[in-house]
Length: 149
Image (cartoon, rainbow, N blue to C red; front, side, top):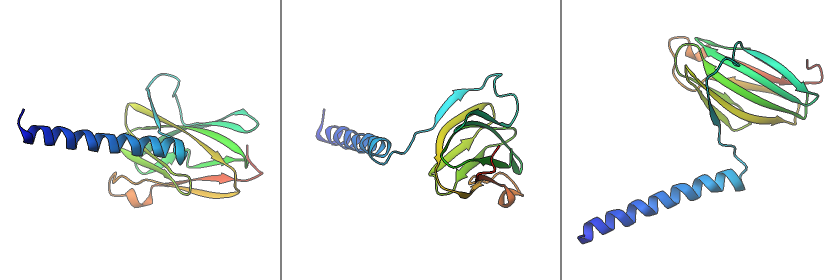
């Protein structure tokens, strides 16, 4: 090998090492969850909020032009929520403010993430991928209140 090939291999290995370090640092040190992509199957029949336990919910969200179904999710404080996300038409974004959730809603695929809501309040959900003319109106919300389901 000549010296330029060796330099490229060393540089590529260094960049790959930095990438893996950043990924592992964010997962373990900053407690940022990496979303799971699960195969689309018949269990995702309709958009709904399922109460599994007193403080555990499963929310099946379908993104479509230009809304989320369900558009409003109500849970009590201290709840752990599993979000299952898919799209009915085009690629959409799914960002929950103040929670670090940033998912892609892709037709034919289901993304999953788990979020704990400890504080009362309203957490807006916005689409961060341009999905058409009405994109700016595509919003939803998670309400954390005692008057939950």
